[in-house]
Amino acid sequence: MKARLLELEAELLAKEEASRLAEVDSIPAESGLLIEELERELAPALAGVVPENWKGFLTYRRRLGELLICRGRAFKEAGLFGKWRAGLDVPYGLDTITEYLRKFDVSPPQDLDHLTVNFGRGKSVRVFLWYGENFSPYRLIFEADLDDNPDAALKTAISDALGWIMRKPKQLTLPEFLKQESGSK
Image 1 (cartoon, helix red, strand yellow):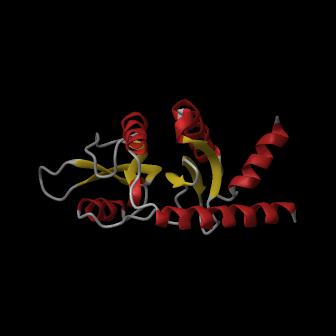
Image 2 (cartoon, one colour):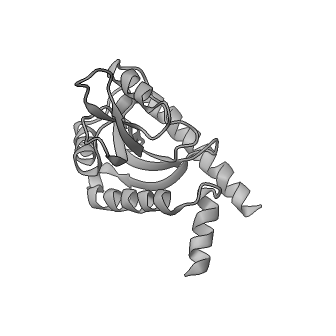
């Protein structure tokens, strides 16, 4: 029962933040700089050129400065001299590259766990890190005021969450996995 209440609370938080984000028509310069720094340090960008055997995490932007982080792998462009580019780690990954290059909105598929970094505005601008999986509502992992220079703490939270994604068996949800992890320690 308690787990269900936490899920409902997370869903409510996600909806409130989404509505606040809809009201924000531009993000402050500090937000853009933070996103750029994360992109540089974390992983190749979606549709970026990578080695042919590359597998790992990739980043890409969505509306209003939202940054997504998810698993990716290399896909070969058509043609004899086509480059290898980073695409989402799904069978239709090459299509995600094409759509992104054409400036279409690329949503992470349901079966691909992902992280979202976005911003909201209340009394001040806040940065949020969300975890998404399947049809479950986004789970808030990290929240901080942008004025408090949350760069290091945000990077640590992202690193921890990427570790969860790598270790979590597909059949478990994130709460189940974290409960199992805490029980084994």
